Structures are given as C-alpha cells and as structure tokens.
Image (cartoon, rainbow, N blue to C red; front, side, top):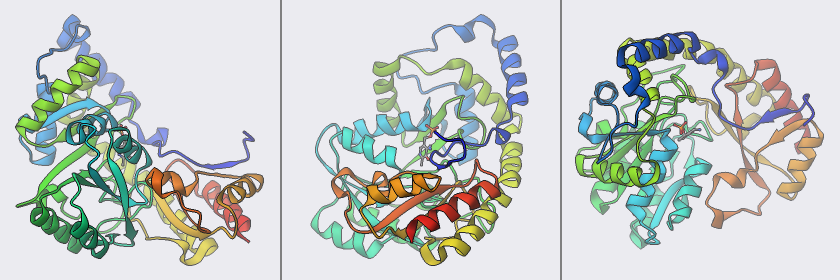
Length: 367
Ligand code: PMP
C-alpha cells in the first residue's frame, strides 16, 4: 500500500492514549504480589473472572459482581452471548443500519436472521421498529447507543426511554454495547440503557480496550446471575479460563484510578481531533455528515457515489484514500445496490491534517 494513501479503516486507539508505562508498573506489582500462581491456570467451573476485577467493574457500573462475566475482549462476550441467546434457532435479530460490522457477522454465524432498523441522527428509527415488531418480535435488539461504531450517532434520551418501553411491552432483550461511552468530548453523558431499564431486560457489553488498553483484551458482559453462569460454562468449553495476568493488571488499573485518569487523558488528546474532523467533513462534504458525534472515534457520512459502489471505492483509492465499503456495516442480506453509500471515517488515530487530506480526496472522488 502506498504510504501516501490515507486509510479510513479500523478503530484502533492511538498509541498515545494507552498508558504503557503505568501498565508495565502494574504488571510488575501484580507478579510480585501474586507470584507463580498468576502463571497457573485460572480456576474453572463456572468461573466468572478475577474476583477483584469484577468488584471494580461492578463499582464502575453500579452492578452486582455476580452478574458480570469477564472475557478476553468484549467481542468474545458478544459471541458467547449470541450463542446463548440464539443457539442456532434462526430467530430474528434487529440491529441498527449501519451497525458494528463484526456484531452483525457474529449474529449471522449463530443463525440469527439479522435485519437492520434505519439509523437517524438521534438513533434508530423507532417508528420503523414499532412497525416491525407488529410483524415479528426479535430475540434481541443490538445497539451501540453512545458514539456508535460506525456512524458516531448517539441514541437520544427520549429514544432510550421509548426503546425500553417497547422492549418491556413486547418482551425482547436489548443488548447495549458501550466501549466508547466514557469518551465524551462535549455535552452531558446520557444515562445508559441499563440505568433506565425498569421493566425491560438489558444486557450490557463493556470493554477496557478504548479506555485502557486493547492489548490486555479485557471485555465483560453484565446480565443476571444465571446468564453469567451459563456464559461462564460456555466460555470454559471454548478457552478453559480467561487470561489471569491481564485480569490482575486490569484490576490494579481500575483500583488505582489509572482508568479514570486515562479516560481524561484520552479525551483531551482526542477532542481536538474530533473537532477538526467534524469541521473538515462539514466543509468538504456538507450535509453528508450523519451527526456531530461529540465523542468516540467515528464520523459517519452518507454520500452519493454516482456509480457502482466498487467502481467508486477503486476511484477513491486511485485518488489516495482507502475506504471500507458501507455495505460491510449492514446485514449480509441487505447489500445495497443504490448509489448512496454509508462511509465510516475514524478520526482517532490520524492527525487533523491527515484526516482532512483524506476527506478532500474522498470529496474529489465523488464528483
Ligand atoms: N463493540 C464495538 C462497538 C466495538 O467498536 C468494538 C471494537 N472495535 C468491540 C465491540 C470489540 O472490542 P474489544 O473486543 O476490544 O473489547
């Protein structure tokens, strides 16, 4: 790949947002404290993960530690959860359109009939969902409510309440996936769906990848005691037990306040990148911007490609910008042939200059 090509590809944290030195110190301290048993198999038998880490996560989310299973990254939690909720049943699953691509693939792999609810500037189109519920109630609705991957859209407070009302009325589960939630650069944090749940069943997926380190692979799922034990049994059948060393380091990072400090540092580092990215999309692509994200890693746009999607992507690459096809962010059965394409533009790992060069090349490829 030509090094001059601007790559709008993955949501990887910038290396500056990972507190490597402090993590090395915590690793050394964890080894000194826990000794050889840190290098032994962690327990098996419905093991939910490092008890100290679960205590810390429970405090962070005001949850019961017995409701939390810690996994090797939250994608693994999603895979275990999909296996548990779908068990190859062919049940319906509703996701946002666009949605997190890997989530859609996981649900499909576990036999879900995945279809999307259109995403608006303030979250999924609930009139569309209501209509769909009359025809079929899904096993679950999957949402990334804060600074969504891939669009940057946040589900509004009003829609959070309405979605939960529908979940309670029709009896479906809501999975909220919140890895970016703490990375808000402007405005007030909205309550999470689990905080608002009342009569609805909400399962929360969390991750330390974007607030501490993706290399530690610490993800978790917060559900209820029975579901947590079910998922733990499934996890044992796949990987015996999670990585004890990483969990011990993560427990120290949370307990010492490093995660809280690092969230502040990451926000300060990313805020100017976010602001510059929004300005450059507004000036080069105008109303293609789906929403001003105010947090997270991504800006989403809908553009008129004026041609076949693959021809457009080739033209953009020729102009020096590599893009992921928008159809990746939709269920496989919904590959669109229309000339409007969704594009995800991650801004977190690029300088503002690099980002705006990429956006200008993208704009030039449209005309
Ligand atoms: N969910 C969402 C919405 C994500 O964006 C990501 C990472 N890109 C994940 C889950 C997986 O994160 P991890 O496995 O590193 O916890």
